[in-house]
Image 1 (cartoon, rainbow, N blue to C red):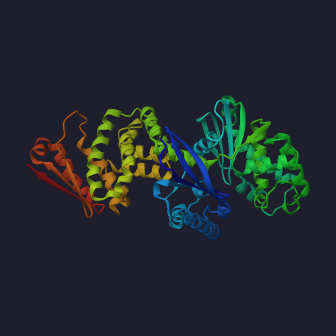
Image 2: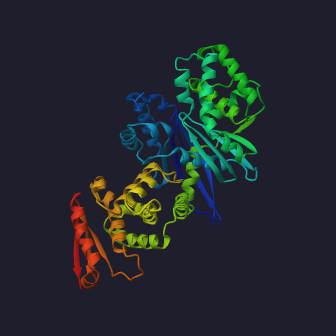
Image 3: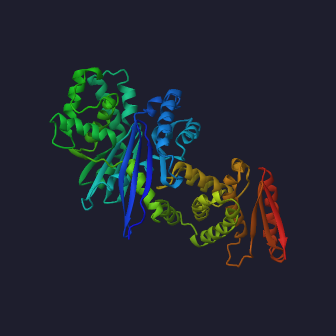
Length: 499
């Protein structure tokens, strides 16, 4: 029996173009299929707006915000869980990213995640893999974006190697072909600079090996179109075809004189940069031919959203891997998770919008002792560093920082996380985690009393049986100390006893 149709959308805020796709999800007998019904693309060139101080200038921000407002109009009927928007390299490296994202979310009407290079690589592969038949063997996927290039080796739907380099078509074009001139020397220098970056990955990628190479996103498709339209190759991109394109553009000497068939006007400013990066990839990795696909980051976002809805969430897999890798005491972490969840659900009854944070609270509880793998002293600080800086497939930068902050807040002084004290949406979950860790500090299997919590205007009231507290003086002392800790960041912990 088929289920009702569902619409989902993905927004990819790339360093070159912003793209949005809207798709219909159809499910039959437990299987889901995505059918794209609408696409929008705007040539924003956000990466070109990065100043020498790595800040997005006002002009590029206005172009971006204008595009997002138009995307937002198309998405007005969508609910939050039906839209996933991500920003990539240009926002990743921008020093004023947080200010820009705040304005961008208002323009779009939905949250925007800034994703890491490795997470971008995972999502790209997810999009590519769903566009290609399975059983083709190991494939190398190369995705040249505006400010970064992702390299992924995988088989069927499983990526094995995921890497990201800070080289792209916009950044390379700006550095070597900014005035439109394309001299043989400039092209050679651009290729050699890109090869120097790719060389870092050369040994790893060659050792793993692949049966065929796939190019995704705009640069690969644009170069393939030029190769085929001019008869340089029958399909895809060839090493010889790239050489012929280089000969043509350097002979032309300037972008205004380039007359290649298949080259679209809006791709012209970035074409020399993309050509240099792709040439470097071919030369350094000894590629002779590359096929291209329409699958890319935005399709990967859609399939990743489907996975989250069907309990196939990559974040669950990542947390399980971290528990194993860092030798976390899963049994104790599970008890902390159960208690934190029990407390938090009582607060959700008062403030239903907290429910969205429940998965993050569960993961924070399971990982709150990850810092013990480094050392006991300041283990909460070690944990915060790991969670804030490690590659965590499936998690956005925002989610990682949330995990990092909550885990940092679970122990020690609260002054270092005073920013969470603004609203209940910010402090409710980490404070439930902190209380759960406090009650389970002894780590022994012991039945806890019924703990009742409720939201106050600026804090939490907790009710504990008086006799139980008298029998547990360490816990009572810790709770009384907590009252002072919370007050220092402007929060109230009201300790009540009952029979």
